[in-house]
Length: 119
Image 1 (cartoon, rainbow, N blue to C red):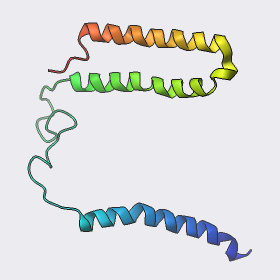
Image 2 (image 1 turned 90 degrees about the vertical axis):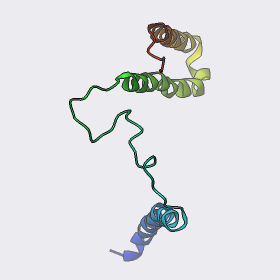
Image 3 (image 1 turned 60 degrees about the vertical axis):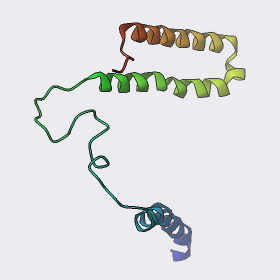
Image 4 (image 1 turned 30 degrees about the horizontal axis):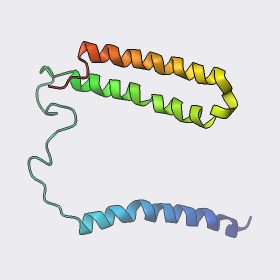
């Protein structure tokens, strides 16, 4: 067994570590670091994380997030469909139109129910 065969693998691992770690170290050394109350506050979940676990919170944030994921995932179906459009023919086209129609009906339903309104 020759150790020279492992040199490309070790080089790949080394370059991967440098590419992954070097920007973080440079950002920490060169970037400003002035935390304040607003920067360190909880902003993504819509409520403070360190309060009473039984407190009431607004579920609209989660509803909007789930709806975003639902309607955003249609792109995962549209891209391969568009790439293979010449191979799948007219049947594939109309199948996707039905799929998009169902999504549009769902979007209109959610819009009418007020699920997308943010107050």
